[in-house]
Length: 109
Image: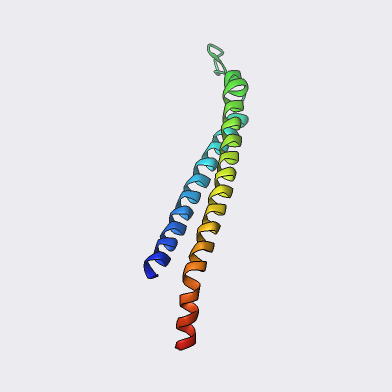
């Protein structure tokens, strides 16, 4: 029984670490999008020799980053719900199997 409980604790810790990692990566994507949004669409050097157009980033890269963020959020949400349901099912099975023994131990203690 102790090994089953420790397995559950390890599983919960792994899930927590993955969630923190995913949050960090999604935050980075969001920050990249914010940096692109704050960038001026066109830059010209002080002497007027060079002009750089950043419209490609605004029109192509930014929508792709936004799509990646949105898809990632949807993916995480869908899999989190699926994993939570699976975890609840396994926890219910664990309780059904081990709770009678815990109850007996508590009664005779």
